[in-house]
Length: 103
Image 1 (cartoon, rainbow, N blue to C red):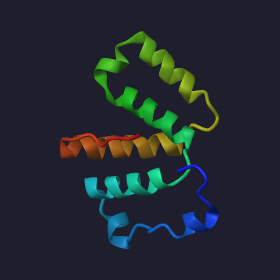
Image 2 (image 1 turned 45 degrees about the vertical axis):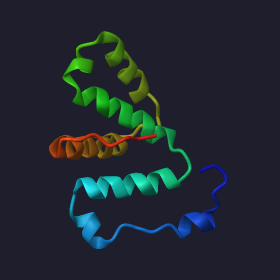
Image 3 (image 1 turned 30 degrees about the vertical axis):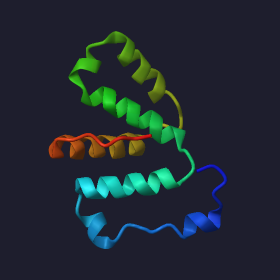
Protein backbone atom coordinates (compact mmCIF):
# COMPACT_ATOMS: atom_id res chain seq x y z
CA UNK A 1 0.00 0.00 0.00
CA UNK A 2 2.05 2.91 -1.18
CA UNK A 3 1.41 6.16 0.61
CA UNK A 4 0.40 4.66 3.97
CA UNK A 5 1.22 7.00 6.84
CA UNK A 6 2.75 6.22 10.22
CA UNK A 7 -0.56 7.07 11.88
CA UNK A 8 -2.38 4.56 9.68
CA UNK A 9 0.23 1.93 10.50
CA UNK A 10 -0.24 2.58 14.22
CA UNK A 11 -3.99 1.94 13.86
CA UNK A 12 -3.57 -1.52 12.29
CA UNK A 13 -4.88 -4.34 14.48
CA UNK A 14 -2.17 -6.27 16.29
CA UNK A 15 -1.87 -9.94 17.13
CA UNK A 16 -3.52 -10.99 20.39
CA UNK A 17 -1.54 -12.83 23.07
CA UNK A 18 -3.34 -16.06 22.11
CA UNK A 19 -2.34 -15.66 18.45
CA UNK A 20 1.27 -15.01 19.43
CA UNK A 21 1.39 -18.04 21.75
CA UNK A 22 -0.18 -20.50 19.28
CA UNK A 23 1.82 -21.07 16.08
CA UNK A 24 -0.92 -22.02 13.62
CA UNK A 25 -1.73 -21.51 9.97
CA UNK A 26 -4.34 -18.94 11.06
CA UNK A 27 -1.57 -17.02 12.80
CA UNK A 28 0.48 -17.20 9.61
CA UNK A 29 -2.48 -15.85 7.64
CA UNK A 30 -2.95 -13.02 10.16
CA UNK A 31 0.74 -12.14 9.98
CA UNK A 32 0.40 -12.14 6.19
CA UNK A 33 -2.55 -9.72 6.39
CA UNK A 34 -0.58 -7.38 8.64
CA UNK A 35 2.47 -7.75 6.45
CA UNK A 36 0.59 -6.94 3.23
CA UNK A 37 -0.94 -3.87 4.87
CA UNK A 38 2.53 -2.44 5.42
CA UNK A 39 4.92 -0.97 2.88
CA UNK A 40 6.97 -3.52 0.98
CA UNK A 41 9.89 -5.06 2.84
CA UNK A 42 12.10 -6.41 0.11
CA UNK A 43 14.58 -7.88 2.57
CA UNK A 44 11.87 -10.17 3.91
CA UNK A 45 10.92 -11.17 0.37
CA UNK A 46 14.55 -12.08 -0.31
CA UNK A 47 14.75 -14.08 2.93
CA UNK A 48 11.52 -15.87 2.06
CA UNK A 49 12.89 -16.87 -1.37
CA UNK A 50 16.06 -18.21 0.27
CA UNK A 51 13.96 -20.15 2.79
CA UNK A 52 11.86 -21.64 -0.02
CA UNK A 53 15.02 -22.79 -1.79
CA UNK A 54 16.47 -24.25 1.41
CA UNK A 55 13.26 -26.08 2.25
CA UNK A 56 12.88 -27.68 -1.19
CA UNK A 57 14.98 -30.73 -2.02
CA UNK A 58 14.29 -30.21 -5.72
CA UNK A 59 15.56 -26.60 -5.69
CA UNK A 60 18.59 -27.44 -3.55
CA UNK A 61 19.77 -29.86 -6.24
CA UNK A 62 19.65 -27.20 -8.98
CA UNK A 63 22.88 -25.20 -9.20
CA UNK A 64 21.24 -22.02 -10.50
CA UNK A 65 18.84 -21.87 -7.51
CA UNK A 66 21.65 -22.53 -5.05
CA UNK A 67 23.70 -19.71 -6.62
CA UNK A 68 20.65 -17.43 -6.49
CA UNK A 69 20.14 -18.20 -2.79
CA UNK A 70 23.84 -17.55 -2.10
CA UNK A 71 23.60 -14.17 -3.84
CA UNK A 72 20.50 -13.21 -1.84
CA UNK A 73 22.13 -14.23 1.45
CA UNK A 74 25.00 -11.83 0.72
CA UNK A 75 22.57 -8.90 0.92
CA UNK A 76 23.10 -7.16 4.29
CA UNK A 77 19.34 -6.76 4.79
CA UNK A 78 18.74 -10.52 4.70
CA UNK A 79 19.47 -11.34 8.33
CA UNK A 80 19.45 -14.66 10.15
CA UNK A 81 16.35 -13.49 12.01
CA UNK A 82 14.42 -12.97 8.77
CA UNK A 83 15.55 -16.34 7.43
CA UNK A 84 14.49 -18.02 10.68
CA UNK A 85 11.04 -16.40 10.53
CA UNK A 86 10.55 -17.46 6.92
CA UNK A 87 11.67 -21.04 7.64
CA UNK A 88 9.25 -21.28 10.58
CA UNK A 89 6.36 -20.09 8.42
CA UNK A 90 7.24 -22.59 5.69
CA UNK A 91 7.36 -25.41 8.27
CA UNK A 92 3.91 -24.37 9.53
CA UNK A 93 2.59 -24.41 5.97
CA UNK A 94 4.05 -27.86 5.34
CA UNK A 95 2.65 -29.18 8.62
CA UNK A 96 -0.81 -27.93 7.66
CA UNK A 97 -0.44 -29.39 4.18
CA UNK A 98 -0.93 -26.14 2.38
CA UNK A 99 1.01 -23.20 1.08
CA UNK A 100 0.15 -19.60 1.85
CA UNK A 101 0.16 -17.23 -1.10
CA UNK A 102 2.47 -14.21 -0.78
CA UNK A 103 2.02 -11.32 -3.12
